[in-house]
Length: 312
Length: 312
Image 1 (cartoon, rainbow over the protein chains, first blue to last red):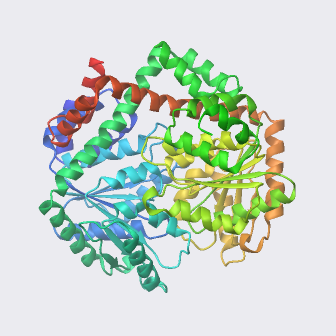
Image 2: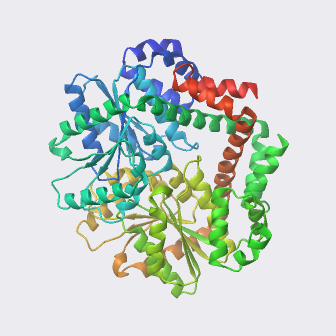
Image 3: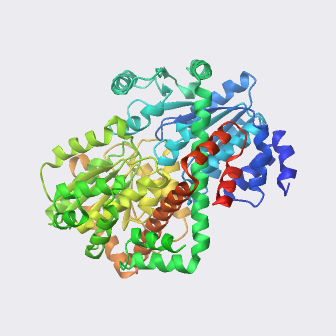
């Protein structure tokens, strides 16, 4: 599996090993990455992409795992992407994968991957979008994208999934309002997880209050309650997701989401490519000298960029 | 105050109104923004930039406000930037500003601003860096940058402050580990806030365990305890920050941080400018047609970007 042509068949047959390799290729900019994407593009199957976003401690992983099990029981193959801005150095993402792998055991119908790419502007969003396409081509009918839900890249990612669930939890205090406000406009469903805790009614009142402040939308996001650790409410959540999916299909939502996602992907890749081209033309020595001028206060960064682009 | 020349004097004299306008100019790409930055660049005073990062509910705002008060008591002017990826639609950021403004009252020695720009790649990081320079030029000796601490932009922001405080809180459960791991390598100080709650010892043990797994660093990040709502531990935290500042000065850290920040600023601006140039050359019609091709599955996004760049 050293060329795109060799990787494509096992990938589209759903091989977990091929999938893992393909995701790494895309993350690392492997020379065959572009050919791989070109090869699988005609074979995309229209997977349903569901986002789950919420603050740490809201129980997103547990809820995601329960949803995956429930979808499996309905006969679907499920991909899970945990979008996680942890650094590679800590090994946190890989460790997390292993622990979760053990929980969901060796079911080949579930594929889990933590996305932990960093560094490039928008790199996390790009890598996640690539992984969604790869899982789609590999026959995973539903893809669950789990994010911490506050960074700009993450907002970009969840803004173009088919259904975005905002997961809240009772008792996290007032500051959580900031998060709720930020993703309010992309929320298709609200989930109050750990709903057996004190304060669930208050969280629901807060959600309803915020909804009443928001501009009217064609879709009114329902508020569901789950206790994911006990599997409670998961079937209802799945039904609500399917209702939202049906609504999207009957209201032109799929085409709209496809355009939003296409725009995000195109712009992210274009920004990367444009930067790469400018870097190549300028050369490392000149770039380094400009950074040094800025650091020493001899030149402001806007002037440095202006000068560079005027020359090339 | 309609031109950079007119705005520069009141800005450098510390006028809150001039400062607010200047930050908006930079955020919105006002025609005079570049001239303003060029004008203030020689007047930067070397402000100390402190980052406070941690999950929602950790009490960062309260801690930030307490630090600001304590710095005021030591005679410093303090700028506060709350980096907040909430959307403009909800008004969350502005509302938050007002509530906090009331708390810290009408002290002209404290300036608070929520950074809520969204949309452009790296836009939040760029706007925050601009605001740091503006506050510096306006004579604010310490700038406190408060972030939710998980998005990629936010990691970029805190990775080049002078001192980065990671704020944790007892009792948020296991999943918080993901955040802790991710910002471990940029943490200069750990703060256990709400330390009067049960579980503070356990959080401290977890921090120490993670520190023992991390690569050795010249600076060993101390672990402090605060109860910000009661003002407890704030003076010790300030002393620890000053100790870290002294260490930076004696170990070449200021020059290193200045280079890191210059590189981040330059690369963010360069990516924006390169993308803008490619867009202008390609024209809106062609860009729209490419997005449509991707959305309809006729072309993959890598091929679309490759084709576009080959032509222009």
